[in-house]
Length: 211
Image (tube, rainbow, N blue to C red):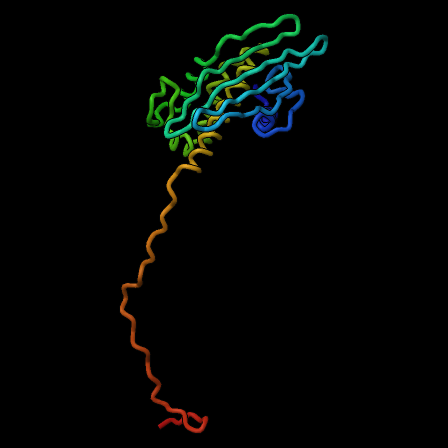
């Protein structure tokens, strides 16, 4: 069962820092470092991050991940590359882009999202408007990766981190590119104005005279 406090702590560490130590989301402990972003939004933003699988009797396993996020009118995520440096050997992890794409497509299913979801492209405005719902759906779909292994738990964390980075990037681009909101024209009161009522009393010598 996912520990939500630990999950939120891991997401915060990866997105905004600082590093979180010995976070146990399910069955294994991880150190979660803040992910870095580089590149411009024209050519795409590259996200790089690192998790450490905490071990007691030997050096921690190091998991490195990176992907590229392109956000314009359409939002796309390029392949996620994951490399695992296990303490006794270096090993290249399998590419889990298929899992991420399937998770996000499933998360946006029946949402009327424009764009080619089979290519991992999603409509910017739709992704922004439904950001919180999409995060929850990615979370629920990615739980199928939790098979009790530390690798499955690492993949689960990475999918959610990348998904949230994608949504954050979409929100930033949307704020910068959306047209300014036009203020509605000031409505005038259609009711005719009444002429001012003239007081029949006159002032004379500082006193009010009443006929």
